[in-house]
Image (tube, rainbow, N blue to C red):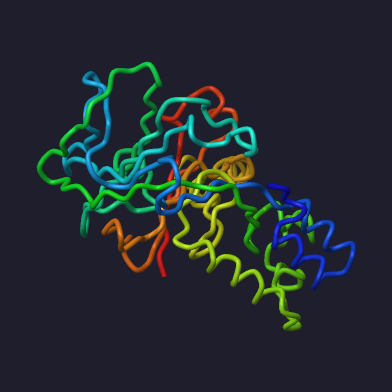
Length: 290
């Protein structure tokens, strides 16, 4: 897919000035959208059901709370990683787990302990001997949904650091409403962007820009790693937020019985350096809802 010829790039050329359209097109990034398997498609990923795990890999547990729920798995060998801009493994599986608890036992995006222990990314090499693993008591599986995928163009949200840096002072995010992407004059761009996103929902995705429900997810992911309000923590958060890329985004989806609170989404993020090195224990996480 040529990002420069995507509907998002075309919308920029239609509604922005020539200079702004060029800037906008340069910000677009490829993402791999996961969608329900069609008759002629190949399985790239699946949500729910029993995961395929090696015998020596234990089911992830949040000590004192219970087992995590299996969310989904991605066959990296079926993802056209050469068309993405993140160093995804060329083979093997990535499995995503999340503690879908209630009340005090739920994963809180701003609580480092709950994120570190209530979410998990497990990488299984291609050569590993795997078999279906039945979920332990307390982590009843979601209905299985097979997924295929396609490369799509993705765009930064109005709070994304890349967009802020491209169209204004990166230290003044409050000015984003003046950006052409905010469509303050009702030119039609916002409607075109909304229609494009509606055509690609539910928003299950690997790589590309995250589609937040409530503000930039990178800041929340960095908050987990560097909590606190002292100057050092604030500086470290800002630096990490600029380095995080989306690894996986899993939307609410009635077909798989997944509803993350109120039509929410789960987001796993990681730095390119950690992703290239296979340090999936360094992945961070947040979730957002309406």
